[in-house]
Image (cartoon, rainbow, N blue to C red):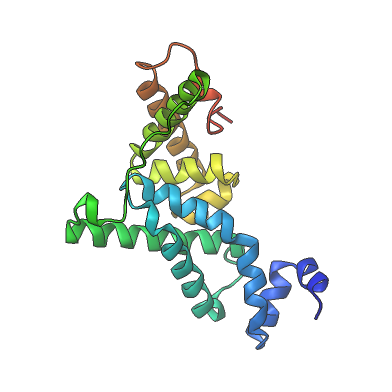
Length: 205
């Protein structure tokens, strides 16, 4: 099977082939979702300053998915939704493990980055604004943060988010409303203009 044939296959076709023994296709399936899953995991870990574990968690997610692929049923959820669910559960498991171990910040893999020199003033201001938005998102309760990341960063629809979080669509909409309201209230002391609508896709929709 040529490279072009692989890229034109749907997820369903590819999964069927993998289940029938053509396991080399799993690398193409990983390629399709690796960046999205890595970004999701990174944002989920950032609030605990564990973002340097993101690649390991991402790899673990794809390993778990491969091991469990025989149990995947497309009638229950799409492959992407199923994969995000595995990623979220793997992140939550890691966060629980870190809390239990009470790992000091300096041993968690997080290394603060020193600010660069001679950065233009506008770049500094923009960086500060974006940083405040990200900090506000990181301060959200886990389900609100997950819902917001999946909606704003990954552009998933309400039904997909509901499946990943194990919530109803109405509950997801409520989580997003509370998340956006919280981010807005956190940012108001810092900015007079509604910058939260211009960064990280924070417009309500």
